[in-house]
Image (tube, rainbow, N blue to C red):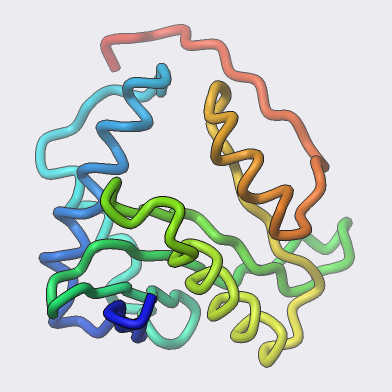
Length: 160
């Protein structure tokens, strides 16, 4: 880990993040992600949070020799009034390049996000794990997360 630099991402990092996210997308599709593939999905992903980066959306990068190799994307959202209207943290994406898996970089990125969520005094933090991603589920359980909700989906118009 000594040669890995962790830092908060800036707007200048968005193109590199889009490329890293594209690798995560390929992995999720290999597990059976049921949403249609979209051209330029990485850029569309970064566009979805670019204007809130540093306010409600946060991304941390792990770089090796100045090259981004891992990231964690987190955001703050509000639960509906019927669930208390509390602020909830969400870790929406975590990607660690294969060369760094097992190095502890995912845990370090998670610690940065959890510190931010603690500082923001969110009620809880949630993570969605794609069915079949047993390694991902195991990782989150080791981070102290517990199963809370199961989401099921039925695709009715696969071409849309």
